[in-house]
Image (cartoon, rainbow, N blue to C red):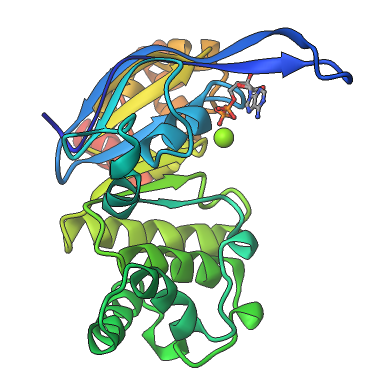
Length: 283
Ligand code: ADP
Ligand code: MG
């Protein structure tokens, strides 16, 4: 069994009118079964409302299944007494960095998680140092989080999760509120966690270019897994991605249009470099 596994997971939100009477149900996650291996970098894509956040909230026991089962590191998330254990194994980073930082000083903020876990003080400081180094924020350890850029704040949030020594980190659109340079910083830090620290990464995004480095991609639509594959397999299905209302990267579209005109390029071109190399080879 992988680090995160779901079997026939379904989640329904209850819709109520102003008086609180039940109006109906929204099935946000619909019979999802997936198995994520330890050390894997998984990306979850999908347009707004496709069920990505609802799915992710099950990995951190913010939500419990309406039907089906979720296991994190082998633990069934429905077992109440395991909740803290599970949250420590699968840390979560959200969209808005301002809602996640509570400390007055960066290093203090990063230390909150391990402190709440009852880790001895000396070890807390070791963890704070290594976590801040891992996301490239160590030199800011004495700064006030308020003065940091969005990308820096988000990296501090990631360090806060890292300090709890999770096996898995789930990031729900961590770059949605950032400018392009902030987005790059965060994605670079996330890749480092996976490559260097071997932490399982589950990255939710609607930016296609952020999934290039994933081992595996799931595309969600109407609460279901609509596509699954490597980034190249996913990117080679341009028409399908358009149907699922996703923006295909410019370079992938260009390669696809060239292919349609008879230029013999490989499927699923992901970067400008790949396109340039493929074109140069044809000369
Ligand atoms: P995504 O993260 O892909 O944008 P969500 O998981 O947030 O998707 O939402 C999936 C579906 O569930 C949508 O139809 C959304 O309107 C509905 N939904 C999300 N949160 C709630 C909520 N708290 N109450 C009722 N419906 C919700
Ligand atoms: Mg969401």
